[in-house]
Image (cartoon, rainbow, N blue to C red):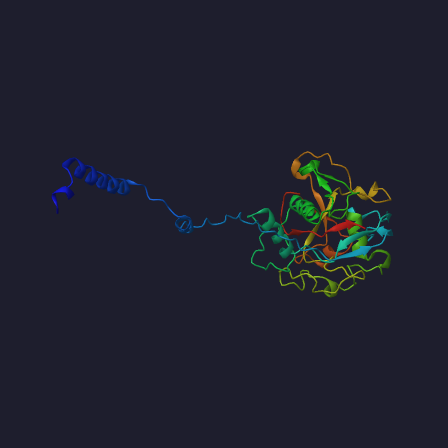
Amino acid sequence: MKENDKLSRRDFLKVTGLAISTLTIKACAPTILTPTAEIALTETKAPSLPTSEPTEKVILPIVPEMGLVESGSFEMGSIDGAADEQPVHTVNISKPFYVGKYEVSFDEFDTYCDDIQRFNRPDDEDQGRGKYPVRGVTWDDAIAYCNWLSEKENLNPCYSGKGKVTKCDFSANGYRLPTEAEWEYAARGGQKSEGFIFAGSNDPDEVAWFALNSDGLHHPVGEKKPNVMGLFDMSGNNFEWCWDWYLEDYYQESPATDPLGPPLPKVDSPFDLVRARRSGSYGENADSIRVSTRSYDGPSYPGGNGFRLVRNA
């Protein structure tokens, strides 16, 4: 290199210093992400999982088959029966009503227990559930079931209050227990009654499970011949709760139209407060399953008691 082409020391340092500064700036500059890089990073994020609330199981009731009972009059009681079946007297049922063709079954009552999460279910005593009539039901259990079924079907419940102060709204369109008069009228066949001793026949073996043919067991509903209105097991199989308080001499003062049973009886002990029941059971003799036979039990005692439903027409 020629002498006049040589850089002075000052110029050389300027040139080399500028180059070094440029390299340093480039090395320290932040990395700028392109839009493509940003999208790539976003796509690597884990997707969020949707959350869902657990759905509550809906339990539908078993709707009972019912038959229509037209209004009418009948002779209630029996001159051949016990003292509490007398005197025989004319009763007028002024309004038609529906009555269950069968006693409420274990299938129906177990569905109710499932829905309200009741764990102490009526005991079938290893005789069978399913289509067998429910037994071991207190009177209070029966009216609770009536109100539950009414609400399930968007009907107006009949019952309010509890225990001995329970009230029934007989104008409501929901399910309820029959009165003694309604029960006997339906068992006899209503306006179609043929005057049979039992519900559908003078031969108990045709229409009833009772002591002489049941082998000491209850049987599935509907296996015997029905009465003229197509109602089954209104003689024998299971006792059936009625609405009424029981009073032995009530027939002496019973009103002629739509009797509802006596008012709350005055008793010496709460254990003497009893509700009426009808039908007899598989363990009873023939005399105890007649359509006019009356019996009773404490409302909180399950025993061999079941029930049948009615509704206003």
